[in-house]
Length: 120
Image (cartoon, rainbow, N blue to C red; front, side, top):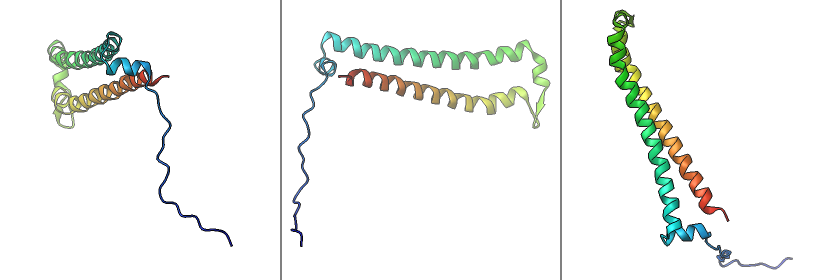
């Protein structure tokens, strides 16, 4: 017959992890840490401005297209004229697509930053 062993608690000792030098620079807000943080902020700002510029550019161009090509207003789709269909139906999924694109790429920028900071 084998002996019984009673386990009272699991081992809670974790190996000591030394913080990465870059992480320490960011935590202590040194000059190098500020450079990395400002780089992250600039990357996200550049991304947001690009998404806003493309979205507003497309939305602002629609009235001009409708004015320059008045025959577009005569096209009927599902009982609606094409400009109303575009403005009432197509614009919203396009804006959702732009929002998804921004969120996905902003998370990618943050993951890249975390990977850079966590690199030993």
